[in-house]
Image 1 (cartoon, rainbow, N blue to C red):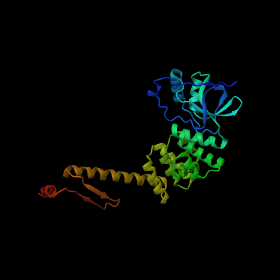
Image 2: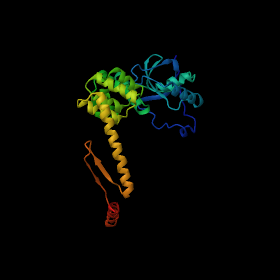
Image 3: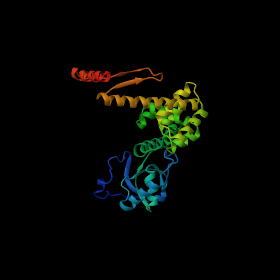
Image 4: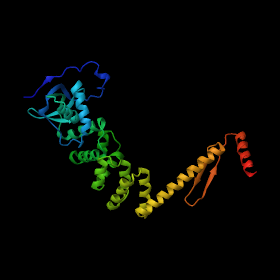
Length: 296
């Protein structure tokens, strides 16, 4: 038998600890307590992984002060409810030993469940990039939404939706690395610029081995696309970076010497220019006197 106790107001003073301003109540008839064992996870939940340490911390908090924000459910059968939003709170509540949990019950069709779960999770927790990409793909394939419609529903640009979906074209081991936060979106986008999956994997291994920044990976990709192999690209990028660092050092030394913001540009062939700005004739005269002393 379902537990349907009316859930009264939360304890006073808790709002000083946790904000409850963004609780979603649209479409809910009431707030009830539902037995933990009558609740099931949504199989289409975008989040695939839950950090155990984070869950334990939340369980301790729930044990001490209870659930601050109700989860959102839909009824799928007699005495059976499926989570729309709040699976993390449900899992932590089980760890905390709760027998029932406060929940909003919403009437919702299957087509909207995934959409609501995705929006809720994007707004409340940090889904990894692959989880988001899979959720967008699910929305498009199972609800018939266009990318434009998805962008409107989740509040993201069409370009952002496209960029996430492109991640699913990467080789599996790169997707897994992105999911585990071993590389970030910047690395992944750079790798996507390469047409060859084998080249993507080779460069990904270099990223892992050498802890390359996104900027360096972008530079390597540009050289590879221009016909260089990975080893040549690494040498040329390192040489360019070394040259750039040397020019930066020289610019700083000149700026200190002249007590002015010296500008210096120099290409790979050694051609460039130096400019020394001045605010007025007095400063110009000071700089010219320094040149005169250098001649002497």
